[in-house]
Every structure is written in structure tokens, then in C-alpha cells.
Length: 246
Ligand code: ADP
Ligand code: MG
Image: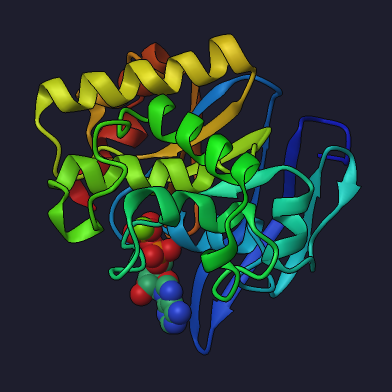
């Protein structure tokens, strides 16, 4: 795979932690405006892959291209500038700030220190994001007052505030009830259909994930196991075995 095989391309991506190879010569591409499921058993290397793509960990070897440019060793803030955002599996909002302020954080230059001086246009943008993620009636709450589903919406809002072209979502359905999964899923579809955002979604909730995605990439032990449409993935014997045996 090469730089122009998708909006996001990785080739032979490898990440070692001491003796552990968390991601092992992984190659796949994400196409513009697709919703890609990125699945695999616990410990398969999904979050580590996201950490490499978003610049949190430098890869041990391999290449990552985004919008045709080599971004393999760029730090997170440069990836954000280029239009990539991600959510975290376990995230910690600023507990002494409101929902609105937490969402406004990525919009201001000196994040932690300029909150007192949030300007009108920043506030308006953050309010727009709150509305988009369904937190408009909870903007003045502190994060600890939100239910679990609200926290996930807050994390989504924080990522969307940077106006990404590509969004990496790490378990956006974790701990949600079926109706909540459907609501988040509708929001994600809306982001792609109406705003053209490309999405890569990691989740174990297949009931939520399969109707949402166009295609899936399955990994195990950091390696590519299968790639295809939801129907192909669902009937793939190697995928079944990885989940039952892995
Ligand atoms: P997944 O998100 O698919 O469940 P992870 O990417 O979190 O998997 O983990 C893949 C492997 O890498 C696991 O064996 C995990 O223990 C290891 N790992 C992840 N992050 C680190 C780290 N910072 N230091 C050491 N090992 C890590
Ligand atoms: Mg993970």
C-alpha cells in the first residue's frame, strides 16, 4: 500500500513495547467518507494502532500516510491540525469545568489557561457542538453530573470540536443500552452522510457496529486477520475462531 491508496493508509505498521509486539506489520487503508469497523479480540492492538495513527506513540517501524502525506512521526497536535481527531476508551474530562467549557477546550489556543477569556465565537462554536452531540440541555453541568451515555457524548463532542475530516472512535458504544447505541449510531451516520466525516470505529458491540459500517478490518495479535464487508466478515471462519478461541 502507498500514500494515495486512501485518506489514511498504514503500511507494515509495527509497535513494540519491550518484548511485546502490540501491532505487527499491519497494513490497511481507510477510504474517504467510509465508515470502517476496526475489530478484534481484547489485546489485539486496536487502541495501540489508534495511538500510533494519532501521534501518541511513535511507531517502531512502518509508515502512516494521511491525505497523501507521510505523518508517521508527527505529534498529536499536528495530526489534529491536519484534520484528525480521536476519542479515548477511558477519558477524563476536566471535572471542575462545565460540559460547554470541556468542549470549548480544543477550540482555544492556550487550552488550560485561557478558559476565563473564552470569546463569543468560541462559545458559539462549542454550543453548536453541544447541540450536535445532544448535550445542549446539559452544557452547564459538570462532567460528574452526566450519566455514562452523556460522558461518551462529551468525549465525542471534544473530538468534534476540532472539526475533523477523520475521526477514530475507541469503543463509543461501551456500556450503552441498545437505544443509546442506536442514538449514537444515528449521530455517527449523520456525521458521515451530512458532513462527510470519515470514521474508523472500534467496538465489541457487533449489534451496534455491523449496521453502521461499510467495511471491517479484523486484527488479532496485532496482525491483519480479515478485511471485507460486514457480511463477509460475519461468515469468515477465521474471524469466528478468533472470537471463540481468542
Ligand atoms: P486492544 O485495544 O485491541 O484491546 P491494546 O492496543 O490496548 O489492545 O493492547 C495491545 C497489546 O499491547 C496488549 O498486550 C497490551 O497489554 C499492550 N500494550 C498496550 N499499551 C501498552 C503500553 N503503553 N505499554 C506496554 N504494553 C502495552
Ligand atoms: Mg482498546
